[in-house]
Length: 337
Ligand code: KG4
Ligand code: ZN
Image (cartoon, rainbow, N blue to C red; front, side, top):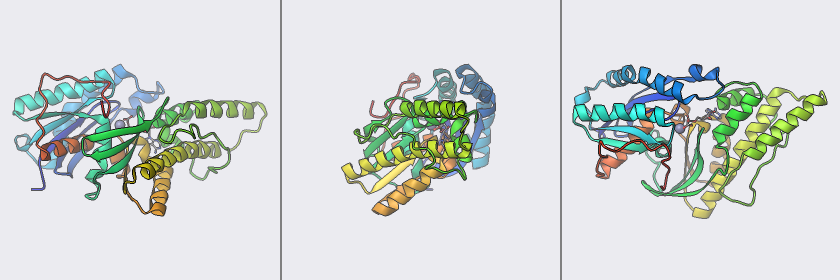
């Protein structure tokens, strides 16, 4: 027995993710993606998301339990995302988690989605331990966090406007690359020249903060002018240059935090960490500086139930009290709040 057996439920946005983990061992992790439901709208429609979670959640939970080869009675706890996210989507998962906890007589832990991303590397690497600097970059949030100990977080900086994933999504939409934009730009950038167009890297004077709205303006202006002049560059060059501008800023600010805190451990999570160029650049910078880098496989970077369960495992190891079943979702939840 490597630790408590926890069922994790994630429904904060457009993926229903459910997993069973034992200690930090993933026994099963299943996902129902709503990408196709939202793609025709060019982004996530909250009402569509909530309805899709309702349809997916029960069969998916059944699948996660069956694949893990366990009986629900064996579970030590239920972990559910409490926020941040879309209120309707969160409520579906939270109500389902509460009812499971109540009917099975198991403790319930309401988890911060971003803490889930912050913990996800622990599922892949036993050596991922604080003190650490963690880059969190997803569709709704981008932050650099100094993890002094598990549960002790100092947010050093973050985006002052769009999240990194949001920047990818908006720019991809503008370029007609579809939704979600991150994977589309990642794929389109392949073979493109990342130095073709020197898009701006903003907030040079603020070591841990990012801003992506200027990049958006710069890309749209550049493309409009190039189109007018009849000199549009190959699209893969544009994608590679956009990607490089976002990645450069994320990497630079992360390592600014490493330098200023003196930590030797760097973690990263959130959907944007599925980006191949970002992973590559983080790795080469970590190697150059001789610090440990812990970025989980792409499927654990994007939303999933295992990362939510992993936070509850830590709570159980540390003897934390579970949450009252009267507690509700908190769409505005944030690390350090
Ligand atoms: O963490 P996540 O799955 O959901 C949220 O919590 O928001 O992150 C989703 C974001 C989207 O903006 C998506 O475009 C981005 O992660 N993303 C990527 C890649 N895969 C997903 N961004 C860049 N490159 C990728 N390969
Ligand atoms: Zn996420």
